[in-house]
Length: 315
Image (tube, rainbow, N blue to C red):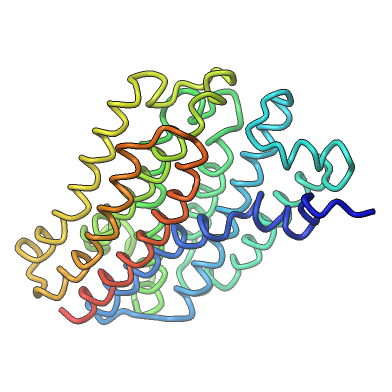
């Protein structure tokens, strides 16, 4: 007789390994904002942006698979994800499956290379490799960022700088008449292409803070030095609050310093939703009650990014 409480193989892969409600919004948000800036700068190109997003999300998912693989290999007795451990015990999931999933994600991401290489030149190879390495070293290798408490910096850079700048670059490159793609990247990319994603980098770190507060007991057993373990939950909550303030103040900088119109303040409409989530982060310590805050924060990030995209495009 089938166990109704046991997740199916399909549900296992979708809900416990891919986390679409978490991974898709955080991967899409930087690309949307880059598209908004490209529209404003008259270099918008939908197909390169879409293909670039597909590559970045595949790399992101490959990183999630690698993170879970490292968890069950290095810490097989840590019951952080009991569904995965149970699936490994009963054969629904194997370590070989997880290794193949990582390889397939990176392989499909690499398949976008020829098109992006044709559109944007050799810099996309360097960008893609940087993304893959960044996804893998989060929890793998001799110096995993997560274990040593460097995840905040890593997430901010990947989602707040690299992803939006890369998405903007492939669009700009498709319009460029320059013979050297490296000259285009190094000398003609506007500085704001590297800065426009900063609130989304802050969102990514805030989502990480929620997870770190929730998983602090497991992280302690694993020997990880996350913020709540190194500095305490109070510090992590202060960090969350400061990053939230940054997220809602930076549109004013875009408006007043970049010469964009007041439309760029549209993301402020999400403040009530952000307040609800922040109240939960500041008050809750129970992992079960913190669990739904992660997809809620990811949804907030996506809605914020769509409003920011609209505001920049209309400016």
